[in-house]
Amino acid sequence: MKKQQIPTLTSTFEQAVAAALAQQANAAAAPRMAVALSGGLDSSALLHLAHAYAQAHGVALYAFHIHHGISANADAWLSHCEQACAALGVTFEARRVQLADQQKSGTEAAARKVRYAALGALCAAHGVPLLLTAHHLDDQAETVLLQLLRGSGPAGLSGMDAANAAPELLANPGLVMARPLLPASRKQLSAYVAEHGIAHINDESNDDPRFARNALRHKVMPALAEAFPGFQERFARSAQHAQSAQRLLTELAQQDLALCLVDDCIDIAQLRLLSLDRSYNMLRHWFGTRNLRMPSAAWLSEMLAQLLEARDGAQPLVTHPDCHVRRHRDRLHITPKLADLEGTREDEFDKTPGTTFSWNGETELAFPAYGGVLHFDPAGEDEAGLDGDWLRGQQLLIEFRKGGERLKPAHNRPTRGLKYHYQALDIPAWERSRLPVLSAGKQVLFAAGVGMDCNQLVGEGASRWRLRWQAV
Image (cartoon, rainbow, N blue to C red; front, side, top):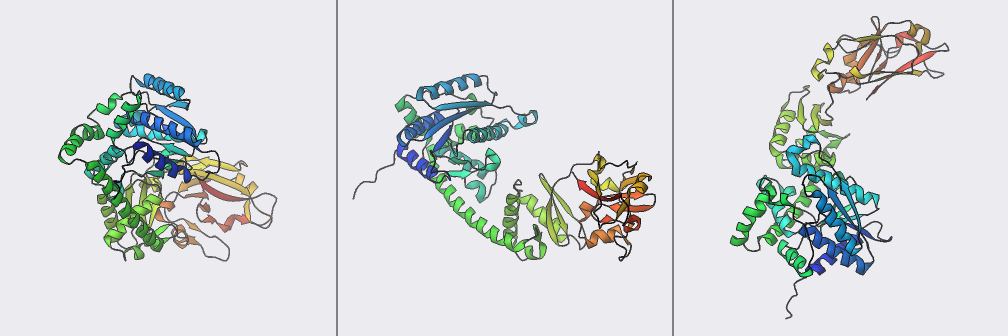
């Protein structure tokens, strides 16, 4: 029996890059790829390998460097990367980014966010569909262990994929990010760099134990390596098993969501048919389809308890960092977190004093305190509307509903309270509180979300106007 050959770093890299390039939609065009180049050992090895591959296969290669400005050595790192690319004849571009003041409490996460967004923008500017990063086997082991320490489920323990699209992170839907060094260890990369005499820089922040990943890298991983040699490969296998499990969970969540989703809402009757675990799995997937941050297990449990156990007719609300989850007529709704209007809280809308004004022929009037614009549209030839001369002579009042307002939508329909109209139109309670009412004296002329009162409408006359509300 022939002895099985161990793949070299070069062959592993070439296979991964060839597979990633083959999957590109524009593979028929001249292939292009870019390297995310920090100048450190890992990305310097990646640049060297990518350059050799590009030369052999006629691929246009770019190298992109992100200058965060955090380290005093950042300018020197940029210069080093530029010189390294010039020596190889690789097209190089750098982009300077800054962290917002509010991000500095989480420097590592903030730097990662702006770095990947900048890399995505550079790839878009140069028409590059494939971005290579230098993540390797030890990075994968660190990621899995970090997620385990955070109590993550299969999605977190899946670690990093060999290649994936990340439109939210990269702000570039057409870009694929590949990690061709993922099967290689840090030890292999170090040996490769030494063998080829590749110069590289050292980022001092990688030695700072205040960062969780660095603490693992310098304190925990060496102890694991001594007690459990080769643990990185076993962690990588565990990540593959978690990826497989997560794919199955995603398939199940898609099936359950298809059964429960009605008009972009979750039908509570269908949700109650699922086991608790399947409910959690489906709801996490629902949040994922909305690009919302994944809720914790504790938050998800509390949300379900509040929304499912609420009495009939109640309008419970659960606040998520990115949205509100509400129950209305036995359905769960995800709604945006609406900003307060002119300092008015949602529970104070009915206490907001009205605003009086006169109409002087404007086609629209903005009312920021009510969150929208009131439009005055000319009535069609066969439409009834408010007489323009009459309307100019009125002292108009816009306000949120106080209670007791009544509106007659047509001459052949009865006058009803606004609450009745809202219910008939299935307008949820949280939307009703932001729908203003327009009156002239004691006569309601228009209620946003419902329409105009017919009592003041006329069918003849050169100047007839219809009212329309647009929330902003």
